[in-house]
Amino acid sequence: DAGVTQSPTHLIKTRGQQVTLRCSPKSGHDTVSWYQQALGQGPQFIFQYYEEEERQRGNFPDRFSGHQFPNYSSELNVNALLLGDSALYLCASSWADRGSSYNEQFFGPGTRLTVL
Amino acid sequence: QKEVEQNSGPLSVPEGAIASLNCTYSDRGSQSFFWYRQYSGKSPELIMSIYSNGDKEDGRFTAQLNKASQYVSLLIRDSQPSDSATYLCAGGGYSTLTFGKGTMLLVSP
Image (cartoon, rainbow over all chains, first blue to last red; front, side, top):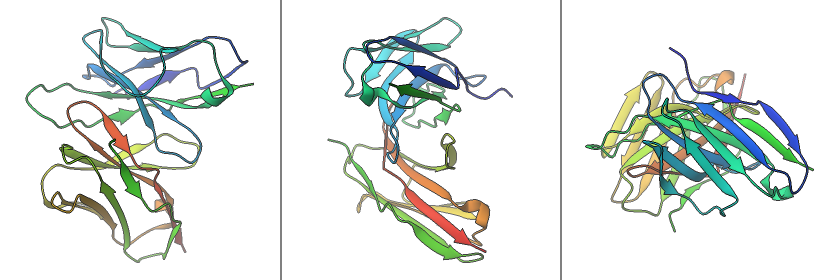
């Protein structure tokens, strides 16, 4: 059973550049959430995609955007990178059950982004 | 603003002891609660989910939820050095999860 996969593992960019991170959900899952985890902090919710639409968004600027493809995989794009964007970016997949508030999310290995 | 609070630790326990990790949450609308384990440099791993008041046991782990007190806890019995990690508490509703900053657990041999 394939788990959540993310690419790349590590990435180094300079301020002002743009970056695209990729995620494939766990087999059988249809929902992808993205989180940013700064050092020493818990993951912070960026947004969630379901049925190729952004279903909910956290408190992140419009420089952060995303996309979900028909095969449920997802991309996170960050424009005009700032030093403060350096963090571990985590993708989590889950199965949308509209009749339930349960929300078990399984994380991928993450992408470590360093902005210089 | 939804908040989940955890003591950052470190919580130090000897091998074989019971480790008790706690968290409180502010959003009464939260329906589901989760404990994740995160080793240094790795991503969070889901270890327990709890949705109803009371206790839920899975192997050496017991999660406890008290919605009236807005309190969630995780007990780890027979703690092992391999349990040394940061434990993240998360609460959520329909789609999002709000995480605490995590509690570092150190289990000494």
